[in-house]
Image: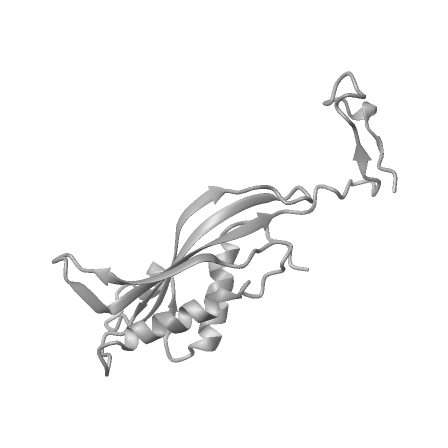
Length: 171
């Protein structure tokens, strides 16, 4: 199992999947599009990183708001980019991007919308698909380094922070 240790592993995993599904399009972050004459492709952004509820195993949760901005500069039909955004929505629907389910939930609240240009006119050549995806970082806290899970009930000990007052977890 791949151990997820940092939030940046999610956009990297998304990029790998998108590059395999759309080999004809540029996929990446802002650096990958800087200075490019043709900006057609899929730009991956992490818009927000919020805290989530820990897993039952004790892993810390990060709720990442991810946006995939699809642009086709020379679209042959007026809604080609809308169609690409729909494909991205379908792809994101049940995708953990190759990451293990213990560390990555399925995307939630998937939405697509055309971008709004500076002149407040709709630009149908650029659409953004956004969703929230939870990552659970680090190893399970149930795994004690000695291999013996320990437990203490707050009502049975005088000091919950004293490791000597913990006892092995009974099966």
